[in-house]
Length: 159
Image 1 (cartoon, rainbow, N blue to C red):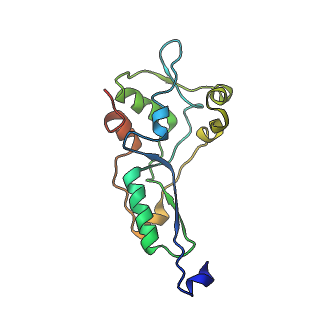
Image 2 (image 1 turned 90 degrees about the vertical axis):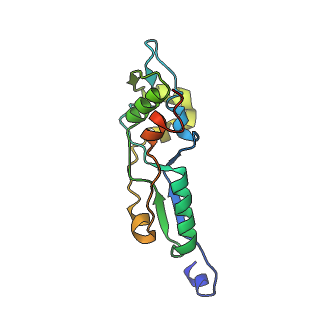
Image 3 (image 1 turned 90 degrees about the horizontal axis):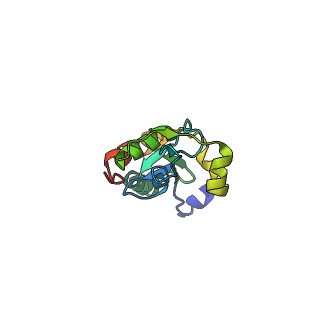
């Protein structure tokens, strides 16, 4: 890629997102919409102690635009806002946003696997990242609401 850049061929930098949130869409909807146990508690995928690194959809769009316009050829950026809530926190915020403000409980891996199939392992990963490289090299500044804000009182909230 770098040799071709000398011939005027432009390869853009790449940005890989965390869990994209906002506008009431994407993976975050699966947590508050998850199953309930016999006592009415929201059943989380996995223990609930794992972190998910997230990014607001509009912030990710701005990062893609910056990477396209000014990133070095072959560069790589994580599109994450640096907020890494636990799945338990996500479940609690989603529960409040739906007006059910209920307990949240983790589930054994085998239960999560039975429910989510091959995707279960991805939901059990502990993911924490900052997006610092995109901030320092591209001047990216995520400004959108956090996933917890969106779930409890933003676009996902139904209460």
